[in-house]
Length: 159
Image (cartoon, rainbow, N blue to C red):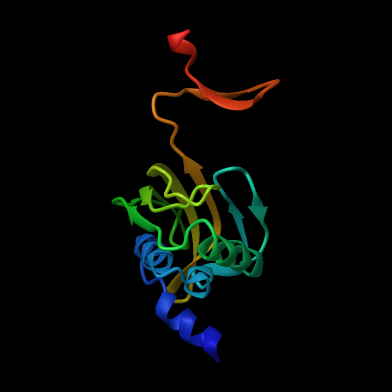
């Protein structure tokens, strides 16, 4: 019955509600509430390309993050942009800003910014996320390049 409580709290009545739901769940460090925003068979790609294929995997990955690198972190979601795809689907995008991530040595890392894309489907009177993609913003950079020493962000215009 616990799952039902999360579903009711996370019900998205408008596509833009997914953004406030994400922010609220993240800032509470609540992987169950976060997962309730997603369909059972949802897809999620994170900032480094890890790809989870269902609500359970999305929940597990975020529970791990909240217990380790994102303990006490705070995300601020920007104003959402909504593109309706007919009456039963929408794409919602929002910039985000996060502070309080924990670095590998245990110190607080610097702030990060990114853009979230949610794809939603209307089911009855509610909306549910069927796919999401999270992207970091690399300020002043144009793309990534792989080298022998690893991947790094670069700006071809500055070369």
